[in-house]
Length: 314
Image 1 (cartoon, rainbow, N blue to C red):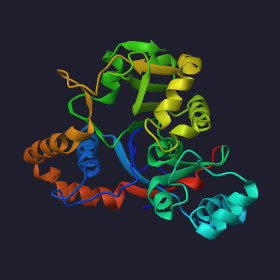
Image 2 (cartoon, one colour):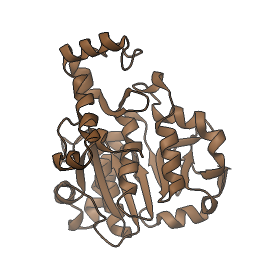
Image 3 (tube, one colour):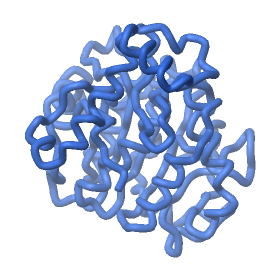
Image 4 (cartoon, one colour):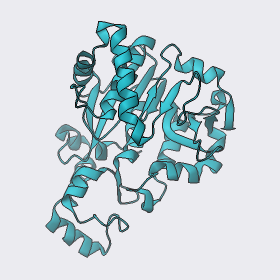
């Protein structure tokens, strides 16, 4: 599916981004598919649009665009060169540097095919899938929604009776600027940092200031975290202080289980059992929430493979 415009009249899009495809077999599905089901059902109940993006480094992309913007063909060719050993070695030799010198697997073709999901042209660096949330947000903001809400693939809406707008209105500010005067909102990074944002849940207003901040975040040089945790969140923490006037961090915990919480962000050992239980509870509510049915519908209407090198940061 090629999404170029908003599919409905909803003013809010909920976005997930993961390098793994959606799966319709509940018994063998990964936690990312279970989370996609839960978040998609929440969106259906609240009237939001939902989109799941699978980021990839594509070689061939829309040739029609290259006829009007020839530079985009080079943007598609460059990420492929690094995957071809001979071309990569020749290029590295000529430039006398590597793309990601701190990554030991940099010369392994399998590593690039599986781990690198996006490429920063300004910094001349490849990055892992977690960074692709910024590229996906940039893409989604071009679809015409008033707000784009990004949520990690190990994070879910657990309170399906509360709208995102209601959560924003009733949740107090932890640090930064109130959301009505800022452009991007996060939850606090507890239990690690009380006064810093966590990049697992992002509410982005569709405006020039948001795009400017995303570009600043995307282009922040942090090569040691291109392929290592906490990836893009490390850069977010480094630039937060100087951008606090346009960022909101809500006083809400989602990594630890609390009473009446809106969102839950899960540790690795909890993901599959916790999400499987929520899926079973939702399926018991109505036959329209059948996992197989919903996932087949998502793959047909709410899923795209995004060739990240083709998203232009103007």
